[in-house]
Image (cartoon, rainbow over all chains, first blue to last red; front, side):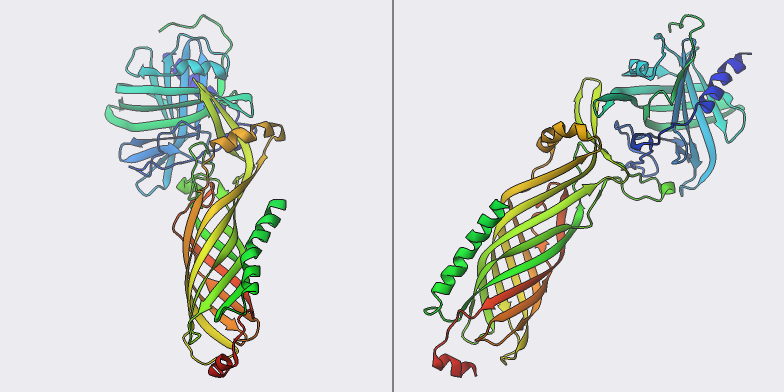
Length: 212
Length: 265
């Protein structure tokens, strides 16, 4: 039942409608990192990009996939990154969704509430945090983080042509976890995503949000 | 337009002066020229310009910036006086040139973003369809021309090495905003843009054909390779080197004595 509780928001995140208007701000812009060109550089422009080293491969944004979906339910925020797993030469050999769930003290009803995440560091080994990984179309698997951290370095409320349009979340993540008694690592992760209501869904409040 | 006319008038003054002196100067010719050049380089990245084209390998794209014209376009016109050595094979020229350099940045898609300002956690972007800039310079060229063949044929090949130093007269900018009602931000964007250099310099090796005999009106057609010593002739584009073409008409202001005529024949 507990697993179902964790998996349901992930499924909900996957079912969120794709952005209706594929305007320039919804597109993925991949600016290579100078040190490792297979990873995107850390940026704060809302490039809808992310990337991390995943074992001897890379988990990176895919041009044809919405990179980030966020759902809020009963005091827990589910931050999902969707992309490809690629090898050294850059060819994708699988899709992957990484969902990091953690409690937040603020009730979130609108994407603008994500500004609350500015300069927030989440210890993924905390009791209330869960990490799920979905490879290709398999069922999401909850993994046990041995260590890990998700840092929202910056949240920006973006106005385009004088109209509040999106929230830009930029940050870094890395973790080591056990899956089927095997240790795996996602390291040197970074993300720069722009979120509006097409990428965010807050479940109607049923119970009060849990304070962390 | 009025400014351009005034500059043209200023450029004509030395030419008219040369005409007036024609009888007392020997081996000196004055002429007018017109030329075009495409100078290649790359877009100048502004800190406020959001990149809009993915370099992600699966997208098949390779650069991350809005697109510019393939080159900065240069147009130049002016007057020149040229002094030839006694054997009529080596020339030294100088004058005044009115030059215009134009460059433009276009969105890859419908628009690109310009970061207007940031206040705390609030960030403000504006959507721009394209930006165009024209810079007008007044330049002084110095050219060294060499004609390798002695015979005074109607068409003679020549080689040239020239250099021009120019100072900026004025700049014209044009912005097209995605939302025309944002036009009131034009002054802000202008203020935030890099400024083109007040002075530019370039050198140009050239090869050309001199058409016409010495005593007749002469037409010179040449191709040149301008190499910019400074890359800031535009705020939008770094220009390095390119190709140019030039047409010069030299009028017979250099009246010779009969003795000189015999030596030429």
